Image 1 (cartoon, rainbow over the protein chains, first blue to last red):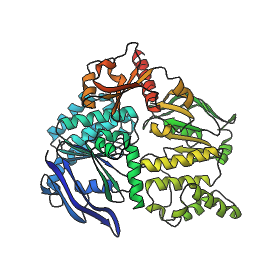
Image 2: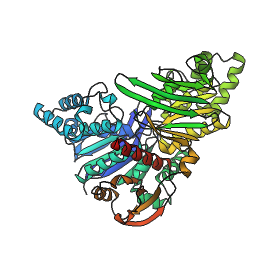
Image 3: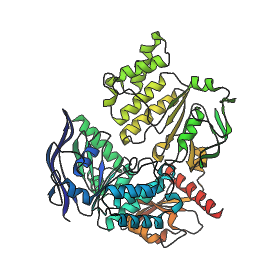
Image 4: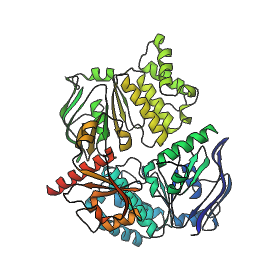
Length: 243
Length: 303
């Protein structure tokens, strides 16, 4: 598989504070990459640099071979971003959200109409007309993902997509993520739910801006003689803390 | 004890809480577990009197809380999901501020403040500004501030949502110590792994209680067989293949690298799965929640 994203010596400073410290990794096309780390480890900062929302301090990010810092407009077309908490406007209904996000993403009226018809076949139209804040979390998540996929992005960033939802909704969401993988999409997902990470092809653990673990979950468990990702995570963090 | 009897609450035409009743035992940890929007926060807010219920009664030690509102505010502390700390003040300054709000006597203030900061592991960060704390530390500081009122009842609304796994474990260690001190703790959470810390569990879904019981009884009286299967092949493809078995598909679900099977029907269907190993297993709260969620779904379909 080819690398769709290459991150080289990536650093981000906010004043004197180093949020991301000279990290290197690649993401292969069609891969699910799990991004882990405590709050403040640098996960969201890294994601924001890759999708062009934040300027890098030093280093290089290549997406499809293009320099991410110089080709932001181009990159926006192939990237989708979704987070559980802030993706949709709660006081608009789902159709209005689709219209709004379709508009700002530069989709034509005709395409937006088509998308609205598409969602009506997936979700009860009555629910689609309720304000987003009032619809069940599982449906809200479905709509968020639908909005994120409207532009048919090649690379999808999911920033804590399963925070605050019950196990059933989380599971169904992962079934959808796997469908996206089958369709050839590349998926980068950050999460605090460590049991989910087993579904990723590879994981990265960040701590204090450093990349401290990288590898395939099963292989990492074997290598470190651990029974669960949670044990692996705890160990990696405390070792790094001591050093 | 706190007792809720037939409590309902609607916001316009949305039934947020639908005729629920349960009891909160003292000196125990009661956990209200459910998804975003299931009604957890509304329940907690009604207990502390922040929002008015439409119907039903809430009793605190057999006294109606509406008529004895001052009583509950004097012995209960409530921490909302997003607690307001002063981010430009240091940890210690925040503590001083809240100590004054709670009118902690001057003589006691230093001792109490230090004891709480040590208890929550925040003592080493006294001089750090609250705005520069990590998510987990902010929650520990928020907890410390509400403990300044020396409450008997501690009510925490999703204290760990968005907090990383290690900080969540630390937070619950503090909670368990508070229980040892005799405090009554009521926590809402969407995470069933941390709900394992509870003594009494209330599962809520769409404003209704789908099951409530003590942890021991929930685990010992689980009414179905549960299997843990290490599948041969891609777990998602196996799930996709199961979709053709309309009645069965929901009884199989993924949990980490394992496939779980709740055998609700008489016949065992594990032969549908290619596997390396299979074993019968005791349920975790997550399995128990899924079981009662299925039962609720079936009931709704029948209705």
